[in-house]
Amino acid sequence: MRLLFALVGLHLGGAFMPSPSLPRPQCSRCGAKSICSFDESDFAGKQGDWPYTAADLNRIDNTADDVFYYQPRFVTHIDDAAISSLTKFYAQEFASIDKESLDVLDLCSSWISHLPEEGVTYGKVWGVGMNERELSANKQLTDFVVQDLNDNPIMSQFEDNSFDVICNVVSVDYLTKPLEIFQEMHRILRPGGRCLMSFSNRCFPTKAIAMWLQADDIGRLTIVGSYYHYSAQWASIEALDIKDMQSTPERPSAGDIMKNPSLGLAWMTAASAVAKNNQGDPMFVVKGVK
Image 1: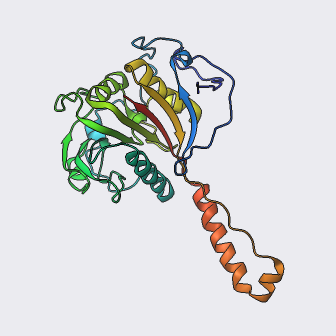
Image 2: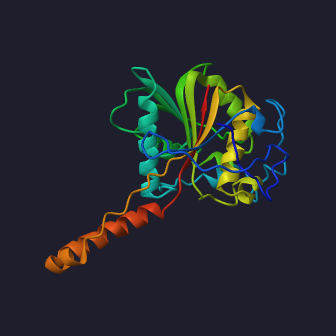
């Protein structure tokens, strides 16, 4: 399915071909909903015709990132429901890859990678991140390297066709050299490998690139989709809403509550938990298949 989004009032360097919008179809796996797939006709330029300027990729704070990330942050940057949705999505994606074990690269990694613990056999799990103390605390990594991808986007430590999956969690908005990084990801993925770029609506605004701050959720999905398109020949590019939305439990009848008041309290507690989950952080993925 082609991308069918109207990009109204958003300047992104003439990178896209605007089209009318369509409703999102439900995806059959877990809670993920397929928003759209991208093809060449969705973009104004061809692969290699990089449309973005230095102004598009500029940041409020252009000081060296190793200064900003010098102190470890042992925190999560999305809420528990979004993390759960991401881990469930990973589990479904990994299960669909026909391999006995998976080699995974967690790009812009930290002290936690949100990878599923059960139902998956891992080979090597590499992390590339900014803070050695955070990476050392990540028990899911078998190896890691400290590297500022905005300073050096070339991952020469990895050979061609090294990984089955590349993950990046809530960090794509900070990349100032996305062309080189997406080209590198394509190089080190194996044929048929998956690249999963996930994000929500939170960020450090002083470190996010200018066009990200100017965009809404639809615009951000399209920005990431364009990174794939302009960087290399990907077999498919798809945008997904992976937030696991829960259904509000059926309210007991007035008669049932009169007979057993605890039913009303139980319902209010359950309904409140569902509302909290559904009103929390959104969670999106743009998936590229090599």
